[in-house]
Image 1 (cartoon, rainbow, N blue to C red):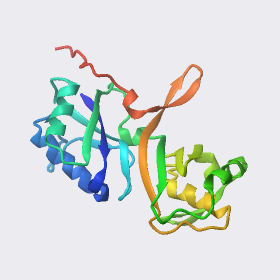
Image 2 (image 1 turned 60 degrees about the horizontal axis):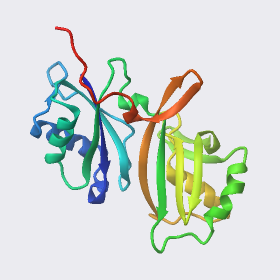
Image 3 (image 1 turned 90 degrees about the vertical axis):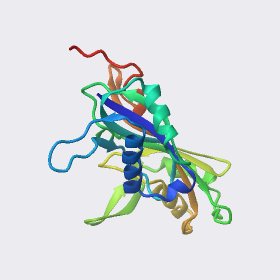
Image 4 (image 1 turned 60 degrees about the vertical axis):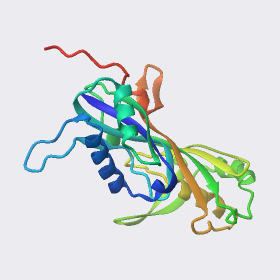
Length: 239
């Protein structure tokens, strides 16, 4: 049985990297007495897959992890057990049973939404809200993206699905797939570049609000949160 676990990451825990978060959940699952499934071979490990890893320093209201289990009492029981052994800054919010044919969390990621604020004393001179109409009207927004294989030009416009600003707070929905993976800081830098201004170092407070996947419908493909896949009910298994 495959479970999808949604959790929040906030407070000082935002400075803990992805590998340490993974190790934390491995220990938490054991402490909670979850009947988790292990891989085969000489070095068995818990069958676990995370959605898009969160950058160090970012908080999140929508992180996802898939695990495989042999049995559970209920999704609510798994949620309560994990929260009982958790630490301040990590809170499980939902647990769903996935259908057998569901892709794992990492392969499912298509987009992510973010809220972006400026730190006190790091607010840019430019009024971002006044720049947005011209910025969004551009046919192409080309930036240079650094990768392990070098630098390449990327058109942000192709992966910028939504962008707004109210009272200095930016809300955005961007491509988060393996082929796109636009980061909020890249969007903010591109906006400020329109006014000839550079983003100050460590100027942003970024919260990932949700992670989305594609759902094919009769009217076309649409984005839905990852926790809309699955159910709270435990499926009946034939003996």
